[in-house]
Image 1 (tube, helix red, strand yellow):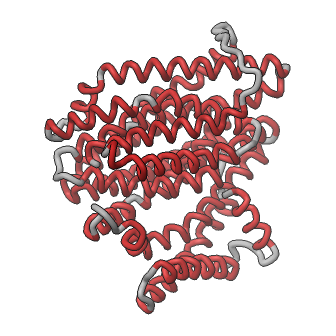
Image 2: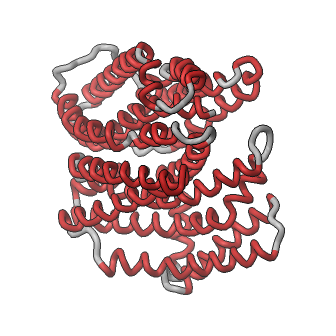
Image 3: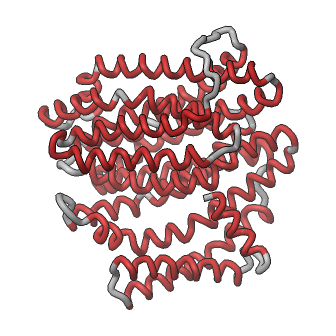
Length: 463
């Protein structure tokens, strides 16, 4: 698993570097183009984008395939030669997923422009299901390679599931389209910065390759579980509002500021009971669900500790996503890129200090810390730029959330001590924490009584 986690780091970083900036740079441009251009011209623009990124993805995959051995040695020099060879062989399979995932990112942009969020949200489920089935039925024949081929199959299924958004596709590539050049100008600074500050998993692999076997896997499992939770909440609460924010910024700046504040508060409200549940129940949850095969009790306890250390990554990632979307909606990709570069530089030194002090857990703690620092800096910049936050509209509502969260934590801790935690009592404990949190939130005036059903409907609809 250390070899697999090493091999998969580079493809996923490259896809993140490309698709994240692609979506957030492209959606505002597509919204504008859809309003101003005829349907046939708009369709040609979309075809240009698909062709451009498909060709670029295949070229990138070919380069990585040719240099796979060298790249693995650079990523994890501390791995023993046998492990590096296995990682190289896995990487040569995983590169096939790169063009598929990049084209998938373009298709997601098309869906977001049309304010259609169902298919991009459900596509990863079908992709993951296909990968799991391949692993179940193919692991005896393929061994660890089943994970690499599962990654390729996952990407292919996701792309095929979203292809329905393309109609009347043209394979002609028009480089003279001014909108392509405008898009590239917006995307390049963001991608350039992302190449640096989104490479944190590569830094992690480099540092952890010198630690005992298993350290890379503990951190990767913990980060993956935390990231999945963040992605579910981010897509439900944040990403679905991006198109709306982009349109509102063009029409009504005051309404834009009000919408950002409302979204910022909603994310804080939703994430608090989840953090409480993770603090209370993540270890018994992992032991109940994943303790089988090669996963020992000690392995899962170590992973649980890593997940708790990553809670700052979860909170900082979600709040940072709101703030980054605010910059993107304003058409400013440069500022958030510079902030990301600066905070990641600080994070490298924090990770080195963390690994020397707390081993692999120190890397998780350092990651959480620099993500939260980035949120603070982004808030300060936006406050100076557009006077985004105020005590009445932002700080006071968020402070009201803290007592209900502490109360829910106290009730959950008591429940945990009174009952032996099994799968059903675990679900009951999580439900109790959420119910107490909502009740206390009403009592503390986070929202009015009549607002509760409407608020919950919005949250459920968003998620």
